[in-house]
Length: 165
Figure 1 (cartoon, one colour):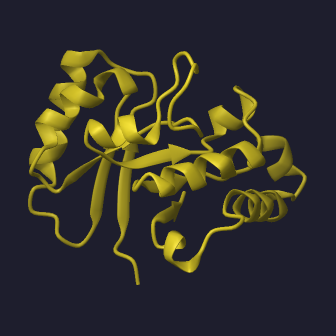
Figure 2 (cartoon, one colour):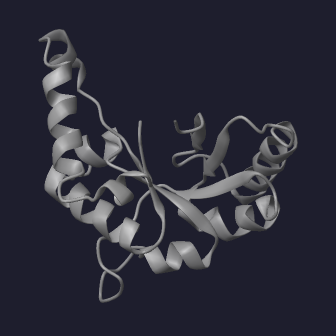
């Protein structure tokens, strides 16, 4: 059985100073936590700064998104290799904002999942329904499709490196 996993997604909040301060606070606050894996996912521009703060601690670093290619002319995107290079262990994929605001499809998320796992990182796969879907009683069907499509083609070994949120 997998240990409990606690991850904080900081979304597009704070500046560098407050990100560093929060990372230090989390590090101190969970320094004696052994029964759970802990990760923080700051905005990408603060990954390096936060990585310095949590280095050597029991707090892992995660990114909020990743592109499905290793390199190329993809302005503004971040590859799995870049994330690993700055100290990331995890990548959040499929978050509701990415799906419903940015228009990411299950198929695109699946490409990202495979690329991130292939890059040696772990995935936090977010799934969930819209309010209208919940009110229509469609939650289970929506989540089932997101999980099935997001994880298509993964091996049992790959699945050990995916958390569903």
